[in-house]
Length: 97
Image (cartoon, rainbow, N blue to C red; front, side):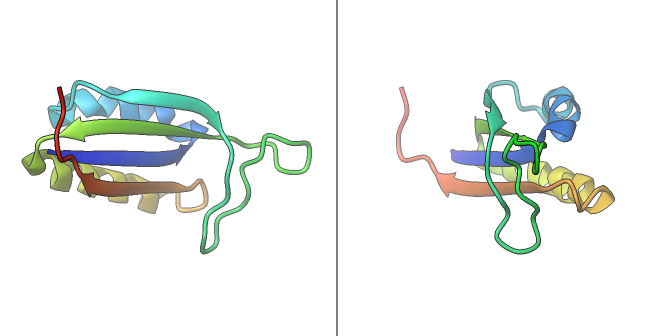
């Protein structure tokens, strides 16, 4: 099993959640109004007057074979709108109940 943490501009949220099912991913946890800034070219997402946009975050735990299709989908979506900001991080899940 793998944990996939997706940080995304709020504009991507509905599309990503709608597409999780088509990728055979049912379960996820989401956080809205997440603040941050990308480490390369990302503009701040602080929810302030100067930087009004916000991020969301999604955490999903998936079977290993679901990771590559999910990352491919997210990569394509990010390439369509690179200025919005979209990142995914994957790590091993040692155990769960």
